Image 1 (cartoon, rainbow, N blue to C red):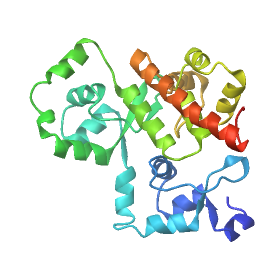
Image 2 (image 1 turned 45 degrees about the vertical axis):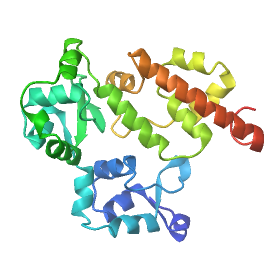
Image 3 (image 1 turned 60 degrees about the vertical axis):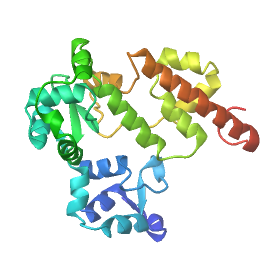
Amino acid sequence: MATACDEVRGLIGAGQAAEELGLSRSEFARAVQLGIVRAGPPGAAMAARFTRTEVDRVRSAGGFPDALRERVETVAGAEAAAAVMGVGPSRFTRLARCGHVTPVGYRINRYRAVVWLYLAAELRDFAAREPGMLCGGAPPADRELMADKADLRPRKWRERHVGLLLGRTADPWERAAVLASVLPDEELRDTVPDAAERIVLAALAPPPPYGHPQVPAAAAVATRLLRAGPQPDEIHWYRSSLEFALTGARGQSKSTGERGPT
């Protein structure tokens, strides 16, 4: 809930912003995740706040509110996603596992299985753009992936998740923290041997995405989705990116004395 001081400065809480935009809590969280609604400076306990200017900007967009809801509409699981695309669940699963469509989120069901979430608008766009993928046999690359029992959904989701997080900040240490958060602990220690730097990166690490479960058993399943692997090339990419980001972050600390070890 926004305080009196917040209201004077034109800042409102997430609940009020969602209500004014005609979105449910989950829809609003998705809009923030995708950068459709940009958060303002955080409040007490790092609670998200939003400027009146930002809310008005989103409201003034063409087609509001229906167009906004369409942009954040998600479907859960292969059957629902397949129905949006007009294909069978098995074909959709193959398209998703082979990386042709990218999840936007996840939830863990009562059987501790991952249920992937997809943006309905993206599924419709893919169906319109790639009609040849909706019928006929799988292309050779897909057949090879299926023979290897590959599943690119976690990797593709991580790419999207990290990209969205990096798009929210220009701060070098925060960007490094995003990349560090994806690496398994052993890989992070090898990449960042300085314990003091690892403490800074941990303090700046982004919170788990909206919908990340709180129940320990389910959280353990979901947490594995946040870590790169098992493909060595994915881990190498994040290690290299983190090393590059840290070079810039260390340079900032030396020149300004701000944030991070020197």
